[in-house]
Image 1 (tube, rainbow, N blue to C red):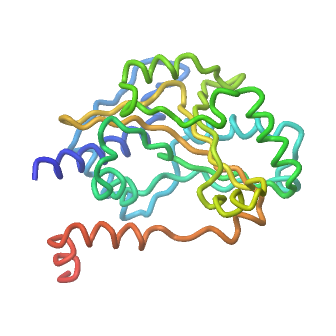
Image 2 (cartoon, helix red, strand yellow):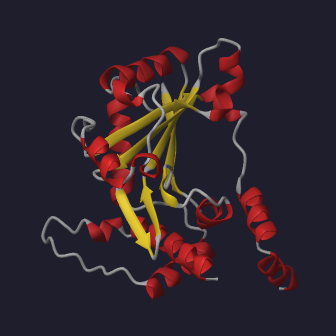
Image 3 (tube, rainbow, N blue to C red):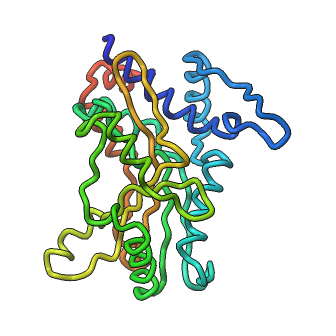
Length: 258
């Protein structure tokens, strides 16, 4: 029971602090931040967001995503050459599924897609140009397996992140570029991937701890050819709800009874 309570508290803590980022960064007029972590306030906000089916991240986080996209699409026109989907929040049930149901990922791990957006390119050559630019400017993040804190320790992890150059004109730290898992078959047939995941930290690795459980938070921009992505999208809500209820028979019984 203590483990369930700890993870649930951490899920709410990670979710709520990310959404209250506008308050955390203060304003141009004052550096005073009127915000204190509170389990009671977290629970109220989570309940409210579930009821309102909220998907929009904070203004601060949205600006960070658009700053990254503006850097990548230099010279391209939105609407003609590319489209943007999101950014959107990682749903609470998805966080719970990853941090509790899929056990073994809670040992000082990294949630790489706390907020996610998708950059849809109309032309394959534009996609290749953007990916090539990332690979050229940030060679250390491409083709290497990301060494998270659970593998190399928190101190070494933070030292490695500190060495990475930020995206010019932003506070964004790119740490991983890899083909989306949907591209495995395509790559096995010696074809170039057309869909990528680009993960990043916004200013610094965002760290959370409740009890003995620790978690870093990062963000994800998916980059791909529009025609390739259209046939791949699916709704994960039902899938994640099913996993949670199967792992929690008492919760399943309560939900079915009500």
